View 1 (cartoon, helix red, strand yellow):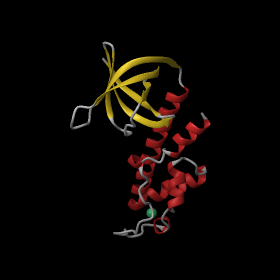
View 2: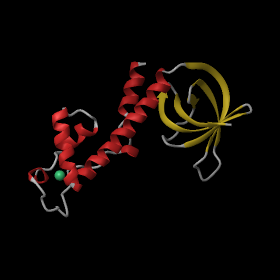
View 3: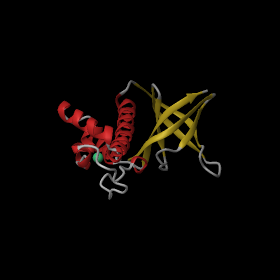
View 4: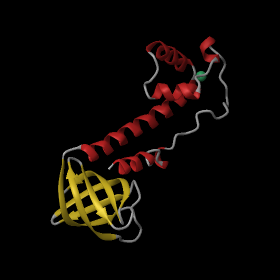
Length: 180
Ligand SMILES: [Zn+2]
């Protein structure tokens, strides 16, 4: 299990959420409107602020600066978006990992929705939890893939959030969007 978690940890900095460069050359430098506008927030501090890891004092200084500096304001906005998306994803993965899961070994059909040609495969459902399920599949599937899982008469729609190799098979975590 430790190895699996380590694998999952290493796939976390996902291409979808690639951190944009925060240190790119500044263009269109605005006229300074105060001492603070001249001292831009460092990339490191933008990151810490977005992850809510700055002291209260420093936080108010950062906020005073971004009130007058559009460059740093947009850097902070991008970093916050990244940080929130990552937090959300980590929470979902933790839920799927640690949440109350009901083990099954039900056969099901997995259909890839955002695919040009029909792609249906037979899979096994390992477990289901509130809002998610884990499938055992023979071929890997890309993260972000929209899928339809048919189990008997129950059709679930969701998105692949992770896919990790386990032995000669793969485990794919599906975040369910809708069950019909
Ligand atoms: Zn600035």
